[in-house]
Length: 242
Image (cartoon, rainbow, N blue to C red; front, top):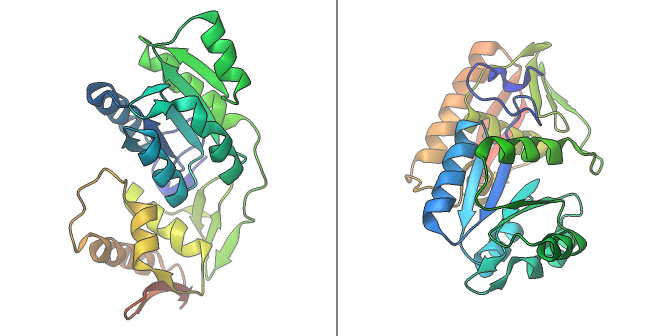
């Protein structure tokens, strides 16, 4: 799949070149950093939290397609969050990544609602293969493709095209475009865009969103996509036909 024109730099076998955001729930900082780095280098966006409370907050703020979930967390067993995660997002995939490795632990984890179970220590290539397999499984119905001007966006495949050709933009700009296209013709708040574009662990500069919007505006203009990003003062930004 050609999506976003990013195949040369970022590749996710599960979503072609689409941007897939994964939540890591792991309290061991070294392991969390290792997982986040490996995911980012494989083309995913990774958010990391270290407790059930932080995981609940993250799941309320973003509809993750997949969660890597440890069981032994400071405030309880990771399994306890599965029912509410499923209730909030029935199509979420949950991969347990834990040191609990007995047959009973695996059975209990899968029976509790996890999609897969990987015991520590593990090979990162196997982890990535399991992530790709989980994301390939059919889920709910995606939003129908959107077309605005000469720009089209397929939310199911996460593919952006201008007059049928791949739209070459950075991963950050791709997240911004997806968020704006979901609400094309309506203003999207600054806070919503920040949540969609930047990971919860990132140290974001005050002007980061403004700079990302400026770069995307330039790309849209250069490609003659027939759309413009308008500033809605005091609210956010709006994507509309030129």
